[in-house]
Image 1 (cartoon, rainbow, N blue to C red):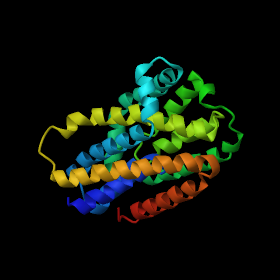
Image 2: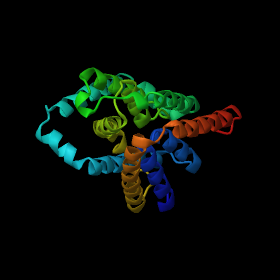
Image 3: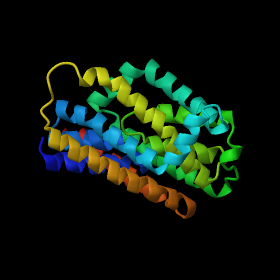
Image 4: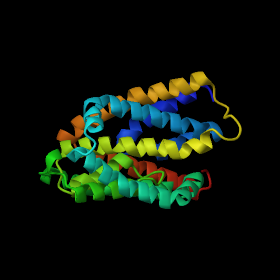
Length: 260
C-alpha cells in the first residue's frame, strides 16, 4: 500500500464515519477497489482511531465532564446506550465478521440505510426533546439501533440519528447524543480487533502511509462532525438516502453480474 491509497481511505473513513452513509461499507468497497487484504484490515482500525480523535476533539469539554462525573445524567445515558450495542456486538461477533468478509449483503444494507434515513427525515421536524429530556429508554433504543449498525454497510451515525428522531428527540440533541455515543462504540471496536492486529505476519503497510491515513481520517472526521451538526439543524437527510440507494444499486448490479 502506498501513501496515496492510505490518504484516500483516510478521507473516506473520516467523512463516512459521521455522515450517515456507512464508513465500514465504504472501506470495504475501498479495499476491493485497491485489492487490499491484510493491510486494509490493519489500516481500518487505525483509521477508526483517527475518527475517534476527531469526535473527541469536537466534544472535548463534554467528555471531560463525563469523566469527572461518570454518573451524571449524560454519563448514565451513554452507559445505557452502550450496553445493547456491546451485547449485540459480542453475541454476534462471528456472524458480523463473516458477513464483512464476504460482503454479500453490502448492497442490501446500503438500501436499508437509505430507507431508514428517508423514513426518519419525516420525523425530524416533530422532535421536541432536548438533551435533558432524553430518557434511559431512549438511550436503550438508540443503542440497539447502533448495535444493528455493526453490519458493514449499515451506517452507525445514520441509524443512531434516525433512532433519536423516532424517539422525538430534536435534531441538535440527536446529533449530540449520536456522536457522543460513537466514542465507546468506536473504542470498543478497536479493542476487539486489537488481538487480530498484532498477531501473525506484519501487514505490508509503511509507517508513513499509516500516519497519513490516520491523520486524514482525523481531519476529515472533524470536518464531517461539524458539518453534520449544522446540517441536522436546518437540512434534510434525504440527500444521503438517495446517495446510499445509488451505491447499493451499483453494488448489487456488480455482484449479480459477477464483477464484484
